[in-house]
Image (cartoon, rainbow, N blue to C red; front, side, top):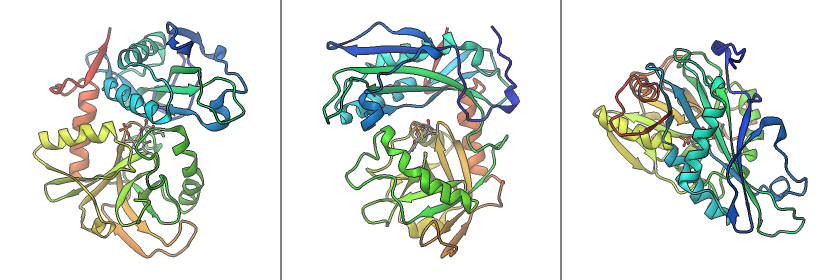
Length: 347
Ligand code: PLP
Ligand code: COI
């Protein structure tokens, strides 16, 4: 049944769709996945995930193409990343096939929530893996739930078109610990950003750039996305073991090479930040969000700005970011040939 959604207004807010696709791990095996009506999704109040954050997640998108076809972008990569994260957590995770099949089923069962082509909007898929067996003590869960839900989304930063936003370098908070879990998509990696985000937003910054937690000398990533900078003909992106390996960044490196740029994946000293002609955040949610300026402050709470790097005027987008964005979203919306076989058609 067609839903009464104004596609020109969708942002990045949760809504109740029709179904969640769910499978439960118990007695050493996963159950046959079921489409559960959204409001029937239940958890035991003693479920470990609610107490000890035994939980990880993924984020990927399905698109309605120019040709009317429905495509999911690189679900195999998200499946493999969840496998790695589950191993880190020490809990059973879905196989790559099971992950992909449940994502496809989620799109099909909620197809009326997939934005039509032409609105620059898509369907965000949110797979979650939870330790659900009841526990009070610190024990490894023996029952888990894997579920895939979805929501129609537009732009993450709220702007209707590609537009640059202000960023700030974070010096008095860390997203990840040295030798910690930053390279894995644990749910517990995120709430530590809420307070710094509200401080950053209070001062008018949309994005926060974290430095490597051990020495604070090198660029790591933004709160919910990877960093890249353009320097001459190079696409430069940090090599760091505390950064989440972004599938968007992995794809953009290939797109950059296809467009004739050289990719440098290396440590980026924060002192190099003034040398980039363009800087951007990249990720599934933010796609490419160009950063017009970065302020360096002794602390997020401080009024003092010790350095200011300006890349473009606020709202404006540099030519390389624009080209990369057009190419990547072109593949996703079926406007540009998918020569790397990144999209999975949902039939
Ligand atoms: N970095 C962090 C901390 C993230 O949460 C995300 C989002 O998933 C990314 C980077 C971007 O990763 P991807 O491009 O796979 O969405
Ligand atoms: C994504 O880009 O898929 C993310 O997971 C970011 C999210 C934390 C908003």
